[in-house]
Length: 145
Image 1 (cartoon, rainbow, N blue to C red):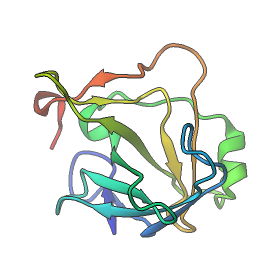
Image 2 (image 1 turned 90 degrees about the vertical axis):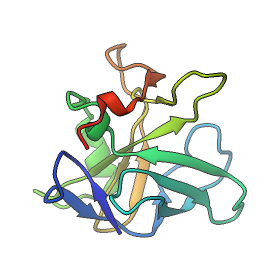
Image 3 (image 1 turned 30 degrees about the vertical axis):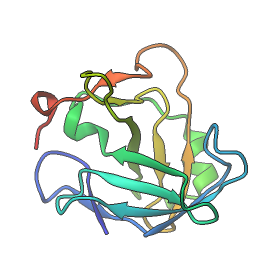
């Protein structure tokens, strides 16, 4: 499946349909294997569903579509842990929390999911510092799509 990583259809990456997390994402106990399913044709919204507990589901989006300036600093150990080949790209996705009570959905920019598209290995990292918010409002006006 393709994930749009920036403005324009030419900037997509093919990603495995099943992701294997190196360690369980925060709050998801011992769950490591997840299916990644596109919920739209453009590759802008995905469902991440636990293989062993299909009722456990998160929504993910590629952040640069909605937050063009999103360029988090990832420790080089993240690429090493994922065993990403030299010169190969990774794909960033962020968890989206649905809006409630008239409030817009929010994106967790503090803890992106980093995926090696070649292997399907993934990790959710918590970034150092306070540059990126835990709940950034997500709106159509912020979308480059």
